[in-house]
Every structure is written in structure tokens, then in C-alpha cells.
Image 1 (cartoon, rainbow, N blue to C red):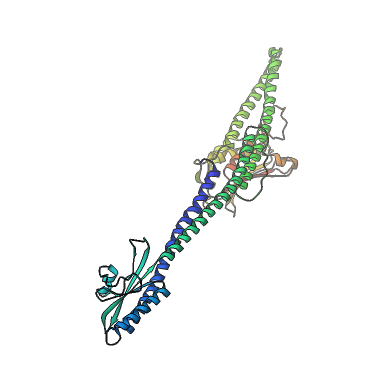
Image 2 (tube, helix red, strand yellow):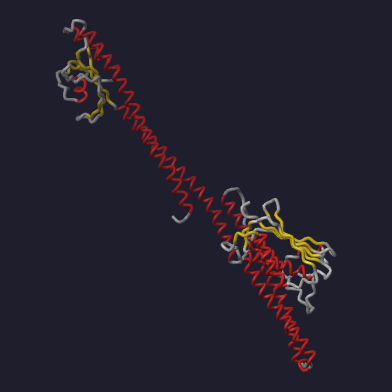
Length: 477
């Protein structure tokens, strides 16, 4: 029963079988009650008619019966019995059978012990009853009705009817319903098997394709048709496979780029070491020069490895449980108080404009400090002595807070703008002994901002500086 196919078949079978079973039982019982009620009402009418006939022919007004009238009434009684398909009897007020339409007459028999007869004798109107005969095993329905004359009990009209036709009809109904139930269950099981087979076949194909893709045998190849949940699942799996392919391609490119970037400082260090080994170590000026190069490249390599580790950590960081609700303006002022002493910005003017209003945000202050540090470091690096660096914070109408870091440096060429946030991208030459960074700072800044559900972008024109803008959502908007 671990297979979805058998679960679908079983559930469908039960869904059809259980309601059908109880509906059949309810229908049979309802039919039984309806027919019994209708028969009872018909027999009451027959009993009233029998009583009126008895009073008119036997009792009359003088209450005295004659042999001729009794004989005539007995003949009429048998005629009524044949037409009504019922046994008609007239009992005395004491429950003794006086007249009987059956050829095997029970005239003289005492029925006073029967519950329904006793009820009428004791003053009741009528009481229906049914019982099974001892000799034939048939079910008969009995209805006695009081015959009253002058306010007193003058007799009892007793009608009995064989329920064979009703029983036969109920049995036929039960048989028909069982046949319909078996047919419905068989059809339901067949359709469930068809649906389950169709559904599980598509799932098996999806599973096989996913397993083959997981083993690396082939790209995920599936034809997705339809608009049901399985089609949605197939599309989701294909989308996931596409994202995995993109991530794998990105990782391959990243590893290739890292290998290339690491090769430059390692090659420089190795080359300087070889030169020193070949005799430059004996020359004080050459030794100092190459040792400085080795130290510079080693420091750059160490910084690059550290930033790569930070970037890898950011790729999988969710910041869940680390964020704090703070006033963004106050937090930014505290960040600047810590960062400004670390920058050499005496050669350029630094201007700040931070909104005075309270702007609640949910952030990790240390991560936002990394973003601001990277942006300001780049701004001061590329701003000339006569230039200026500006940092502004203001609230937008869309439930966002905007932070802008701009400079008046040489700007960025338009062809490079779309690559500014790429890893290891820099417009500076890599073969000079000047620290232009590793090209990872802006990539780290973008990862941090996006982990805070924010956005970051750059605007620039050559010769007119660069403008970096990042936005964060305001808490409680």
C-alpha cells in the first residue's frame, strides 16, 4: 500500500462504497416505512367501511340481527375480501370472532388476548400490529378499528393483509440496489485505476528524469503538459534544475575567476622569490624592493582570501534571528563615528545629511556597517584632493529608507556600470604596486543589502563622479 496508485484506488473505492451502502439502507428503510404507512391507512379505511357496512346490515337501528341479514353480510364480506385482497373479520365487543371472510373461518375464536384487540376493547381507536404465522411463515399486518353504535362499543372491524407483495418489492429493490452498487464500485475502481495509472506514470517519468539528472547522466529532459498539480510539480522541478545549472555555471566561473585572481599575487610572490634566490638578495636596494613586493602581494592575497570567505558566508546567510530593530539615522551616525577615523579623507571634503526623524528598520548593524565602509572606502580612494564625498540618508514614500554615497571623482565608464558589482571586477590595472582592492568589496555590499531585502545600484558619468544608492525596507510600514 506504499504506492500512490493503490492508495488512490482504495480511497476511491471507499468513497463510493460507504455512501452507496448507507444510501441503499436508507432507501430501503424509507420505502418500508412509506409502504407500511400507506398500507396501514388503506386498511384503516377498509376497517371503517367494514364497520359501517356491519352497522347498516346487521345491527341496523334496532340492534337486533337476523339470520338472513347475517348470511347476506357474510356473503358481502367475502366479496369485499376478494376485491380488497384482505382478510375481513368482525369481532364482538369482547373480542370473539363473529364473521370471517376466510373459507377456513375462525368464527367463535377469542382474539381478546391480542394486544391490538385489547387496546380497542379498553377504549382505544385502533392499534396496528404485524406478526408471522406459525404454519406458513408469512408476515401479516393487522388493523382493528372500533365499531361504535350510540356511543358504545358494538363490535370490532378487524382487517389483516398479507405483506408478501411489499416484501417482494423490497427484496427486488435490495437486489437492484446491490447490482447498481456492484456496478458503481466496479466502474469507480476501473476509473480510479485509470486515473492512478495516468498520474503515477507521469510521476514515475518525473522521478526517473530527476534521478538521471541527479546522477549527472544527462540534463533534465521532461515534456510538461497539462495544468494540474503534477504539471506544476514538473515545471517546478525543471525550474529548480535550471537554477541548479545556473548555480553550477556560476560556481564554475567563480572558481575559474578565483583561480585566475589568486594566480596573479602567487606568481608575483614566486617571481620575486626566484629573483632574490638568483642573487638579488645580495643587493640591498633590489632586496628591499622585492621584499616589499612580496609583502604587498601577500597582504593582498590574505585580504582576498578573507573577503572570499566572507562572500561565501554571505551567500548562505539568512540573518534570521540576528536582526535588530533600530533607529536608522542614529545607527548611521554611530557607524560614521567608528569609520571616519580609519579613512584618510583630509584631502577631500566629507559632507553628511542624515534625516532627523525616527526611521525604524530591522537590520544587522554590523553588516550595514560593512556596506557603508566599502562604499566610503571606494569614494575616498577615487576622489581628488579638491573633491568631496557625500553621504545622505532620507526616507522615501514607498516604505523605504535610502542611503546615498556619492563622490566627485573621475566616475565610471558606461560600459562598466553593469559589471560594477561583479566579483573581482575592477577598472584598475592588476600589475602595479598600489592597493586598489580585490574587486570583492562591492560584491559583498550587494549580498548584504539583498540579504536585508533591499536593493543597491550605481549611477555615474565619466568625469562627474559616481553615486551609489541602496535602499532598505522600513519596519512597521
